[in-house]
Image 1: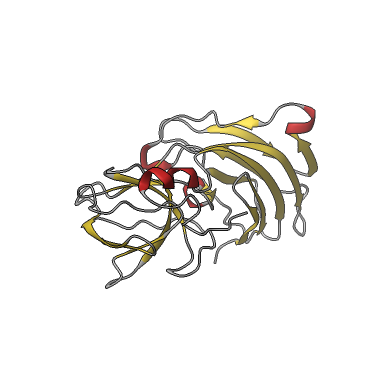
Image 2 (image 1 turned 90 degrees about the horizontal axis):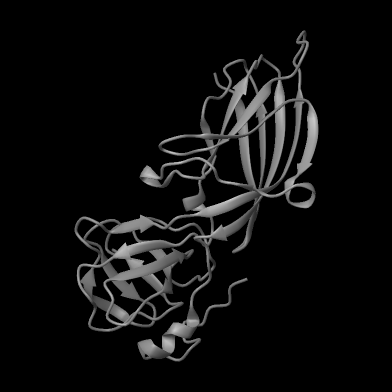
Length: 252
């Protein structure tokens, strides 16, 4: 058995993301459970390293298909410089659907085909195919409600932390019912953990304390995306040999 937990993403735009989390405990509890992975949010930029500069420039806004012969990964060109050996990408739903999603990892030695630039002469790099950029968010608002189980005198506590590969940082330890509108009444809470090995810096994790069977929590968190998330830089297309909006994307 395990606690019955849910994580629901309510909003995920280029500038903001909001989540609803619930737990009905069976007494097991949670320990350092990742609830928000910044690298998996919509509009999260990742950098793909290429095996060489392509013969034909990629078009900003076009959909790239990596390794169509295998398990295809789709992405949108967020930025590219003429003759470059790296591409910045954000997610795409499919080879024909430009709706932004979280970005998959193409992997090494994968073929590349663009919806506008066509089949490329190069592949992803053999050893350094993809890397996340530095993602920065702030916590704008936190709401919570915890309940006690049968026979319990108090509800569980929940420790909420920023993750970091060197040090983690406490955001709050909550119990009962409450709301903190950091951005309105104080200041938005920045990431103050340290260490970004494996792109973990700024991810959010929960640990329950004093959990008993039947106890529960409801937690709402609202974040502002500060950097590492963006739309395609369409203005770059002119220097790449395309019309500015040739990528043809309509992204909110």
